[in-house]
Image 1 (spheres, rainbow, N blue to C red):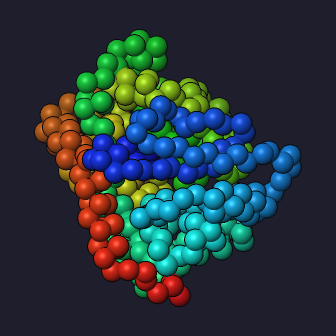
Image 2: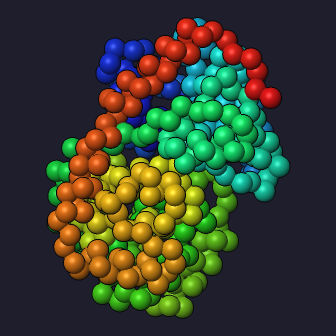
Image 3: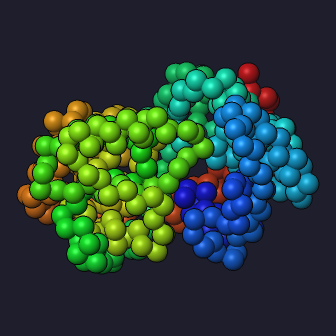
Length: 350
C-alpha cells in the first residue's frame, strides 16, 4: 500500500517512477489498479511445493536481484522491505540505496533474520515511518533515520457509504490485517466474547509467513467462546472504504506496528478507533483514539466507542487523517532524495 501510494504521488509530481515486486502464485498485478504513470515490473516466483520459508526467502532474493540487474540507470533506488533491500544490494551495491524501515521484527527463521539485519545495517540511508521506529533503529543499530510518516487517501474514506455493509453484518467491529500474531487477533477474540451485541469482521489476506497454527488456535478459541467472526479474506480495494465506514468501531490490537495505516483510514472514515497502548500508536494517533492493553480493556473501549458518540474525538480523527496526505509524503521523500544525491555515495553500513 505504501509503495504504490507513494509511487503514484511521486509520479503525479512529475517524477518517473518504476516499482519492482515479486509476483507469487501466478500474480499478474497488485491488489488494486496502479496509475499508468507508474511503470510496474513484476518478477515471477514459481511455486515449489513443500519449500521451507528460509529457502523461499533466499530464492526470492536471488530472483529479484537477477531481474534488478537488468534494469536501467536510475537516480534513486529505494527499498521498502528486507527482501528488496537485499536484492538491490546484491544487484547494485548498498552505497547508493535507501531503505524504509516500517517496523522492527524478530524472526526465528535464520535466513529471514539475516535478511532483516542486512537490510538495516547495509543501506546508505534509512527512512522510518514514525519517531518510535527511528528510536528503535538508533538504539539497536546506532543508525540515524529520516522520519517520514505514511499518507492516507482521506477524501476517499471520508465520503464512503457504509450502509450496505451495516445491512449485511449489523453492528460490527472491524479488524483489517488478517489473523496473525503481530495483529493481536487472539486478544481481540477474547474481547469480543465480552461484547455479545457486536459482530467481529476480519479483512485481510495471507502474508509471506505460515501462520496456520496460530490461525487454527485463534479460531478454536473463538468457537469455544461463542465468537463467530466473519472472515472476509482480501477485500477489493474499491469496497474497503465502505467496509470501513460501516463499522461501529475499528479494532487495532497489534502488538508491533510502525505507523498504523489501516487505523488512519478508519479515522478518515469517521469510525471510532480502539488501539493497543503502544508508544508508536500514542505518537501517531494521540487524542483521536482510545487505547487498551488487554482483552478486558479492549472490550470496555470498544463498547464505549460503539455506543457513546464522541464528536470531538471523531473530529480530531478526521482532521488527523486529512493532515497525512501522500502528496506531502512524496514532497518529503523528494527533499530527502535530493539531499542524498548531493551527498554522493555513502560508506557501506557496518
